Length: 223
Image: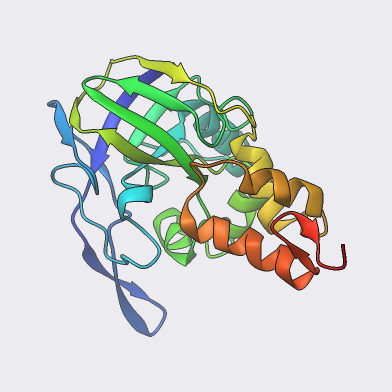
């Protein structure tokens, strides 16, 4: 597992239909080591702090293996590091192999996987394809967000070393599928809530699902 590129950007204004929107999705690689802090990387900012950024989404990682998939799927050869809005382009960290709650050491930083990435319309802007966010989500190749447990400098070429694997072993792909496509699977929703590292927003979604089904704290409300 390896960090191939660190990518950052400041928000910029782009046209979207009849509107102008601000977005930080146009990431570009940096040549030097960068400080990874509790809420973001130095030189990087999020335009929409309600859906991006914060301590549970300090950095977003996406695997280079997915680049190959999308090149074939879309018939494109114009991808560069940061293509999918990721801060960290990584190798060997596919969605089936990385679990929510896994802890990694990269460079001087210690990070924890907190949630998959739910794509928004701005990814469609970046890709020049309005339908791409739906394709991206359906593929399961969504990447993952990280919480910073220890701040530190990171740089391209450094290894991602697994420090701790979450005991529930809910993969990034499984968690994403569970939230968006497997809404009737209440047992897996209970399991998801046992992942202590899961970000608050995703935790709220699963708790609401169980509450609506009459399940409270993992037990049937009638019991």
